[in-house]
Length: 334
Image (cartoon, rainbow, N blue to C red; front, side, top):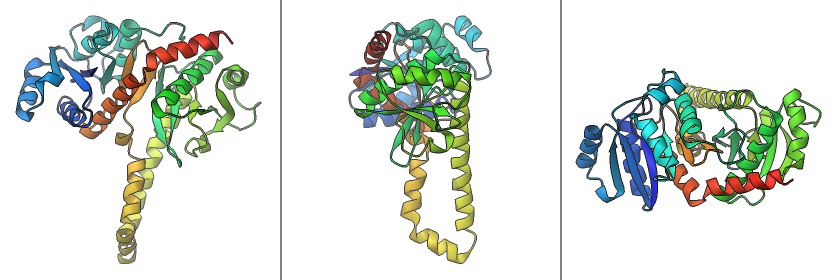
């Protein structure tokens, strides 16, 4: 059984959506056990009403809540009995293999740094979400943990992302690209120009620069960026996806003829919607932390949170922490 820590009171829709997501995940994954951190009375009432298997859940009373607008580092230090801090400590103390939280990104990152800490040799952990592509998905890192980066950070991001996707997704020789404003090696700013030769030297399958228009092309399995550029790409992709789906719906409903066409093409549109739905992809993994940490979307519904728990389960089964540590050691020997 894999013990997964849940920050029940983190997120815009907590605790109801979080607990409903836990219920879904328990039904989908028979080899997980959930440590539920938060207000004991609220959680106990949900467990009792839904008839959850008590051998697969453990309730840990943690009455304090870290809000989305609070100053992250101060909140982590001051609210030691919060659901997030207690859950992070369970990962640091190896009571749980992974944490899943939809709470404040800043607080999760600060807590990871102060409590779980980094894998030995890792300069900076990176937030890594999956993006849908024409052929499957691509791992983007960093998407916001490190807005200012050094070239060596990007080299480590590439190595860690490559190790993760090999283990978790079974991609034997993942294609790694460097996010840039041109495909040529000499293109870019000072950071990407300096990072390019480092990626060439790393023990990975570096295939060159990735322009923003190619992020979703399926030509790359891992896309490396500083946290500022990565976050812009992530948010832009989410915005474009929402715009396209809304506009497509408006146009399909605009006339009787288009409505008939929409009815005929409904299965294809349903598949498209599923591929572009963030709730299908889980959260962003903090790769490089000395333990599993999955940051679910702040507005996660039950389906999205269950997907994030599946991602934590995948992380645990692949023993990613140990494998990333080994990959960093190999990089240091290059």
